[in-house]
Amino acid sequence: MERAIVLVNLSPGTEEKAAEALKHTSGVAEVYQTYGLYDLLVFVEGETEQAVKSTISEKLRANKNITSTITMKVVS
Image (tube, rainbow, N blue to C red):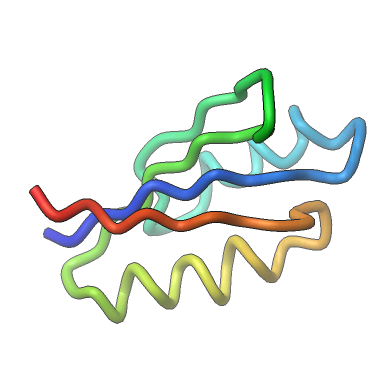
């Protein structure tokens, strides 16, 4: 199983809506709302590295409320 942690910035006022939508997205294991530099902490999982990359690029970054992301690949 491949995993990544994605830090997400959102358009103001869209935090709850975006978090709820991501919770129901395939490939997204966990979603947490946060305070500070980032609005959400998202755990992405997939069978392959390519599956994780696809979830991030095609599902997370395609969300119109997401303004930026930082991805950290989990290695152990």
